[in-house]
Length: 96
Image 1 (cartoon, rainbow, N blue to C red):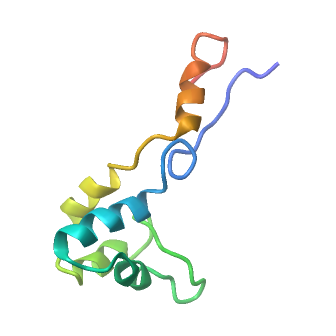
Image 2 (image 1 turned 135 degrees about the horizontal axis):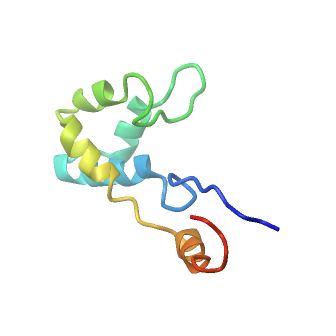
């Protein structure tokens, strides 16, 4: 019997936070979101780096956007249907 399920927030229970934040700050500052995403590409792996990656906030600051404002935008990732499903399991013998 399943007693516990571990969930991941970013991209599972909520939208991926980096694309959401990129859209928010690019609109406010008049940048093309693709331009910011391109700056966030990891040269070695050619994939976007995130807030837990070294240099993420430094790259955002190059656009004149503060770390605090970026963190606020990152927090606006909207929960997904999986989040609703996870909540529906409460009280059914599964720890959350």
